[in-house]
Amino acid sequence: MVVLTQELKDFVSRPEVTKILATVGEGSLPNIGPKGSIRVFDDESLAYAEVTGKQHYRNVQRNPAVAIACVDWQTREGYRFLGEAELHPSGEVYDRVAAQLLSMGYKPVAGVRVRVQAVYSLSGPQAGERVL
Image 1 (cartoon, rainbow, N blue to C red):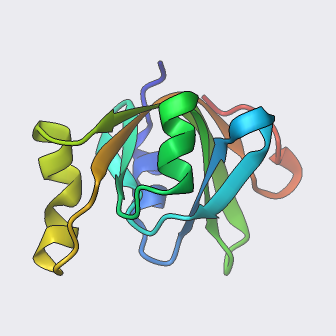
Image 2: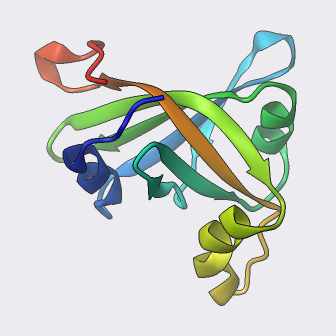
């Protein structure tokens, strides 16, 4: 487990940052897609609301390994967060992650907490280098 720096937490929290989730599918095939609900959960975790309960959800049920890319296309900055996802169909994690979507009329299937194990740069010459 790593402790996220304030700089990383601030970066993920910026509204202009695109957040993309990658999961491991059946037969080790990757699945990738945007997840606008990704946010900082605490000093060691990111989290998102799983709304559809489809491919990403099924993949995490089978294999909790995930990658989350957070990219600011304007500044060409970004980070890749690697970790293990935990599914929370109810309880504190669900309540915290789902609150905003519930207020908009969506009922997420689960809150998903990703305990970050490593962070890599996606920016400039240091792209691919581990930063945490």
